[in-house]
Length: 230
Image (cartoon, rainbow, N blue to C red; front, side):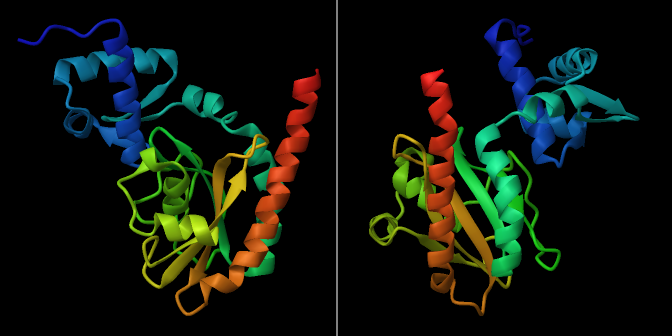
Protein backbone atom coordinates (compact mmCIF):
# COMPACT_ATOMS: atom_id res chain seq x y z
CA UNK A 1 0.00 0.00 0.00
CA UNK A 2 1.38 3.42 -0.98
CA UNK A 3 1.83 6.04 1.69
CA UNK A 4 -0.36 9.13 1.35
CA UNK A 5 1.40 12.09 -0.26
CA UNK A 6 2.03 15.16 1.83
CA UNK A 7 3.75 18.55 1.74
CA UNK A 8 5.23 19.35 -1.65
CA UNK A 9 3.82 16.07 -2.97
CA UNK A 10 0.29 17.34 -2.43
CA UNK A 11 1.02 20.45 -4.52
CA UNK A 12 2.67 18.39 -7.24
CA UNK A 13 -0.28 16.00 -7.28
CA UNK A 14 -2.79 18.83 -7.47
CA UNK A 15 -0.93 20.47 -10.35
CA UNK A 16 -0.61 17.10 -12.10
CA UNK A 17 -4.41 16.82 -12.04
CA UNK A 18 -4.87 20.38 -13.31
CA UNK A 19 -2.41 19.64 -16.13
CA UNK A 20 -4.30 16.42 -16.93
CA UNK A 21 -7.57 18.35 -17.11
CA UNK A 22 -5.95 20.88 -19.41
CA UNK A 23 -4.60 18.15 -21.69
CA UNK A 24 -8.10 16.63 -21.92
CA UNK A 25 -9.61 19.92 -23.06
CA UNK A 26 -10.49 21.18 -19.57
CA UNK A 27 -12.77 18.27 -18.64
CA UNK A 28 -12.21 14.59 -17.79
CA UNK A 29 -13.50 11.67 -15.77
CA UNK A 30 -11.89 10.12 -12.70
CA UNK A 31 -10.45 7.14 -14.58
CA UNK A 32 -8.87 9.43 -17.21
CA UNK A 33 -7.28 11.57 -14.49
CA UNK A 34 -5.90 8.52 -12.67
CA UNK A 35 -4.32 7.27 -15.91
CA UNK A 36 -2.97 10.68 -16.92
CA UNK A 37 -1.51 11.59 -13.52
CA UNK A 38 -0.15 8.18 -12.52
CA UNK A 39 -1.49 8.71 -8.98
CA UNK A 40 -3.50 6.13 -6.99
CA UNK A 41 -7.27 6.40 -7.45
CA UNK A 42 -7.86 7.18 -3.76
CA UNK A 43 -5.28 9.99 -3.89
CA UNK A 44 -6.81 11.44 -7.05
CA UNK A 45 -10.28 11.35 -5.51
CA UNK A 46 -9.07 13.07 -2.34
CA UNK A 47 -7.14 15.77 -4.20
CA UNK A 48 -10.09 16.43 -6.50
CA UNK A 49 -12.38 16.88 -3.49
CA UNK A 50 -9.93 19.44 -2.07
CA UNK A 51 -9.62 21.24 -5.41
CA UNK A 52 -13.40 21.36 -5.72
CA UNK A 53 -13.68 22.87 -2.21
CA UNK A 54 -11.14 25.54 -3.22
CA UNK A 55 -12.93 26.40 -6.48
CA UNK A 56 -9.95 25.28 -8.59
CA UNK A 57 -11.96 22.39 -10.05
CA UNK A 58 -15.69 21.95 -10.65
CA UNK A 59 -17.66 18.69 -10.57
CA UNK A 60 -20.16 18.09 -13.38
CA UNK A 61 -22.06 14.79 -13.08
CA UNK A 62 -19.25 12.22 -12.97
CA UNK A 63 -16.69 14.43 -14.66
CA UNK A 64 -14.36 17.19 -13.48
CA UNK A 65 -13.40 20.44 -15.17
CA UNK A 66 -11.20 23.49 -14.60
CA UNK A 67 -12.80 25.80 -12.04
CA UNK A 68 -13.47 29.51 -12.02
CA UNK A 69 -10.71 30.23 -9.49
CA UNK A 70 -7.98 28.92 -11.79
CA UNK A 71 -9.45 30.94 -14.65
CA UNK A 72 -9.51 34.14 -12.57
CA UNK A 73 -5.91 33.74 -11.47
CA UNK A 74 -4.70 32.84 -14.96
CA UNK A 75 -6.14 36.00 -16.51
CA UNK A 76 -3.12 37.98 -15.28
CA UNK A 77 -0.47 35.73 -16.82
CA UNK A 78 1.88 37.67 -19.15
CA UNK A 79 -0.16 40.91 -18.83
CA UNK A 80 2.14 43.20 -20.84
CA UNK A 81 2.46 40.86 -23.81
CA UNK A 82 -1.22 39.94 -23.83
CA UNK A 83 -2.32 43.58 -23.55
CA UNK A 84 -0.25 44.49 -26.60
CA UNK A 85 -1.43 41.37 -28.40
CA UNK A 86 -5.09 42.24 -27.88
CA UNK A 87 -4.43 45.67 -29.37
CA UNK A 88 -2.23 44.73 -32.33
CA UNK A 89 -2.74 41.11 -33.38
CA UNK A 90 -6.30 41.39 -34.76
CA UNK A 91 -5.30 44.41 -36.90
CA UNK A 92 -2.14 42.72 -38.19
CA UNK A 93 -4.01 39.45 -38.77
CA UNK A 94 -6.61 41.19 -40.94
CA UNK A 95 -3.91 43.08 -42.86
CA UNK A 96 -1.82 39.94 -43.50
CA UNK A 97 -4.85 37.69 -44.03
CA UNK A 98 -3.21 35.20 -41.67
CA UNK A 99 -3.76 33.81 -38.20
CA UNK A 100 -1.16 34.99 -35.68
CA UNK A 101 0.24 33.34 -32.57
CA UNK A 102 2.42 34.84 -29.83
CA UNK A 103 4.36 32.18 -27.90
CA UNK A 104 6.70 32.34 -24.90
CA UNK A 105 9.26 29.90 -23.43
CA UNK A 106 7.89 28.55 -20.16
CA UNK A 107 8.01 25.23 -18.26
CA UNK A 108 10.59 23.86 -20.69
CA UNK A 109 8.36 24.31 -23.74
CA UNK A 110 6.73 26.91 -25.97
CA UNK A 111 3.37 28.10 -24.61
CA UNK A 112 0.81 30.31 -26.37
CA UNK A 113 0.49 33.74 -24.77
CA UNK A 114 -2.09 35.12 -27.22
CA UNK A 115 -3.46 34.63 -30.69
CA UNK A 116 -5.70 36.03 -33.42
CA UNK A 117 -7.16 33.21 -35.53
CA UNK A 118 -9.02 33.67 -38.80
CA UNK A 119 -12.36 31.81 -39.01
CA UNK A 120 -11.19 29.94 -42.13
CA UNK A 121 -8.18 28.40 -40.38
CA UNK A 122 -8.77 25.16 -38.53
CA UNK A 123 -6.39 26.10 -35.69
CA UNK A 124 -7.07 25.91 -31.97
CA UNK A 125 -5.15 28.48 -29.92
CA UNK A 126 -5.70 29.55 -26.33
CA UNK A 127 -3.44 31.18 -23.69
CA UNK A 128 -1.29 28.64 -21.87
CA UNK A 129 -1.64 26.01 -24.59
CA UNK A 130 1.64 24.14 -25.32
CA UNK A 131 2.63 24.16 -28.97
CA UNK A 132 3.23 20.77 -30.60
CA UNK A 133 6.85 19.88 -31.47
CA UNK A 134 8.21 21.29 -34.70
CA UNK A 135 6.19 24.50 -35.01
CA UNK A 136 7.96 27.58 -36.34
CA UNK A 137 7.48 29.42 -33.04
CA UNK A 138 8.73 26.43 -31.04
CA UNK A 139 11.77 25.96 -33.29
CA UNK A 140 12.65 29.64 -33.09
CA UNK A 141 12.36 29.77 -29.29
CA UNK A 142 14.38 26.54 -28.97
CA UNK A 143 17.14 28.05 -31.12
CA UNK A 144 17.49 30.88 -28.60
CA UNK A 145 16.64 28.72 -25.55
CA UNK A 146 18.21 25.29 -26.22
CA UNK A 147 16.80 23.83 -22.99
CA UNK A 148 13.32 23.90 -24.55
CA UNK A 149 13.92 21.00 -26.93
CA UNK A 150 16.28 18.43 -28.35
CA UNK A 151 19.00 20.01 -30.54
CA UNK A 152 17.52 21.18 -33.85
CA UNK A 153 19.74 20.65 -36.89
CA UNK A 154 18.46 23.94 -38.26
CA UNK A 155 19.07 26.02 -35.12
CA UNK A 156 22.18 27.71 -36.53
CA UNK A 157 20.32 28.66 -39.72
CA UNK A 158 17.43 30.02 -37.65
CA UNK A 159 19.78 32.19 -35.61
CA UNK A 160 21.52 33.44 -38.76
CA UNK A 161 18.32 34.18 -40.69
CA UNK A 162 16.40 35.61 -37.73
CA UNK A 163 13.27 33.57 -38.45
CA UNK A 164 12.00 29.96 -38.52
CA UNK A 165 9.59 28.23 -40.89
CA UNK A 166 7.76 24.90 -40.97
CA UNK A 167 5.14 23.19 -43.11
CA UNK A 168 1.91 21.45 -42.01
CA UNK A 169 2.88 20.89 -38.36
CA UNK A 170 0.00 23.00 -37.01
CA UNK A 171 -2.56 21.53 -39.44
CA UNK A 172 -2.67 19.99 -42.93
CA UNK A 173 -2.50 22.61 -45.67
CA UNK A 174 -1.00 25.26 -43.39
CA UNK A 175 2.56 26.43 -42.79
CA UNK A 176 4.10 28.87 -40.31
CA UNK A 177 6.83 31.47 -40.09
CA UNK A 178 8.03 32.96 -36.79
CA UNK A 179 10.28 35.85 -35.76
CA UNK A 180 11.67 36.82 -32.32
CA UNK A 181 10.26 39.40 -29.92
CA UNK A 182 12.87 40.81 -27.55
CA UNK A 183 12.47 41.79 -23.91
CA UNK A 184 13.68 45.19 -22.63
CA UNK A 185 17.06 43.66 -21.72
CA UNK A 186 17.57 42.37 -25.27
CA UNK A 187 16.78 38.69 -24.73
CA UNK A 188 14.38 36.81 -27.00
CA UNK A 189 11.33 36.50 -24.75
CA UNK A 190 8.67 35.49 -27.27
CA UNK A 191 8.04 34.39 -30.84
CA UNK A 192 5.49 35.97 -33.18
CA UNK A 193 4.23 33.46 -35.77
CA UNK A 194 1.98 33.72 -38.80
CA UNK A 195 -0.08 30.73 -39.96
CA UNK A 196 -0.34 30.71 -43.75
CA UNK A 197 -1.86 28.52 -46.48
CA UNK A 198 0.71 26.04 -47.76
CA UNK A 199 0.78 27.69 -51.19
CA UNK A 200 1.93 31.05 -49.78
CA UNK A 201 5.65 31.78 -49.52
CA UNK A 202 6.32 32.21 -45.77
CA UNK A 203 9.47 34.27 -46.35
CA UNK A 204 7.34 37.02 -47.93
CA UNK A 205 5.73 37.58 -44.50
CA UNK A 206 9.01 37.93 -42.59
CA UNK A 207 9.42 41.69 -43.13
CA UNK A 208 5.93 42.52 -41.82
CA UNK A 209 6.26 40.18 -38.85
CA UNK A 210 9.72 41.52 -37.99
CA UNK A 211 8.49 45.11 -38.06
CA UNK A 212 5.63 44.23 -35.71
CA UNK A 213 7.96 42.25 -33.43
CA UNK A 214 10.27 45.26 -33.15
CA UNK A 215 7.30 47.46 -32.28
CA UNK A 216 6.28 44.90 -29.66
CA UNK A 217 9.79 45.00 -28.20
CA UNK A 218 9.81 48.82 -28.12
CA UNK A 219 6.39 48.93 -26.47
CA UNK A 220 7.49 46.38 -23.84
CA UNK A 221 10.57 48.50 -23.08
CA UNK A 222 8.41 51.62 -22.78
CA UNK A 223 6.00 49.90 -20.39
CA UNK A 224 8.88 48.65 -18.25
CA UNK A 225 10.43 52.12 -17.88
CA UNK A 226 7.93 53.48 -15.30
CA UNK A 227 8.45 50.35 -13.21
CA UNK A 228 12.20 50.89 -13.10
CA UNK A 229 11.94 54.54 -12.14
CA UNK A 230 8.98 54.26 -9.79
